[in-house]
Length: 221
Image (cartoon, rainbow, N blue to C red; front, side, top):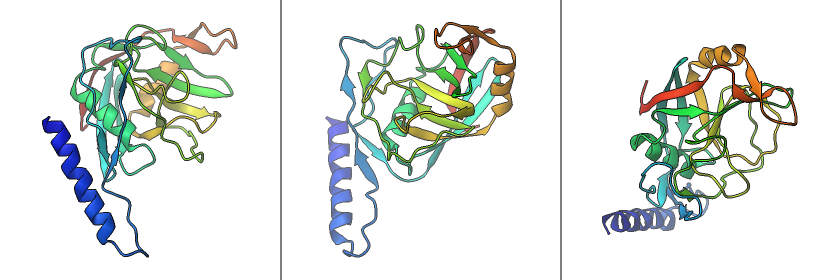
């Protein structure tokens, strides 16, 4: 009930601000509505509470993932195209969902160079028990250092994300969370250690040859 009142108050504040703004200067609302839908056929791999149904559209959040290869700090952009995705990752970090988990996929092909994390059991298995829509403009690009949501199709975002260690020549269908601001050398060491090919489409896509583990994730550096 409390969360509903918070969401209602913030929605009213946003509505008043928009109504009062001049027609020639319509700023983006300070919050947006988000939709986190339960997936009973794909229950949570770890007990978590769904995020509140709104997200801020201002500011950034620094999150550090402490891998067994070293810390990687990423700056999540609430003011970008994917504020709900940012709020979702912040919620999962706060609830320690990613702690003591493993990154099951590493690719280093001419098309795709990413580390994929966020699945608890194996590749694309073991999410938070809910999903939410994509947040893309169609102009997204994925250069080195990009952090974006992974999914299993349109509107299936959950806990899975990827970090681009080289480049990703992929369609603009993946919500961009932010960028790595420290620790890309850890990604480079993961790639240098090699890949166990498991993808029939190529030898440079599969499990990291040396397991990549997230020891814990926390806010700040």
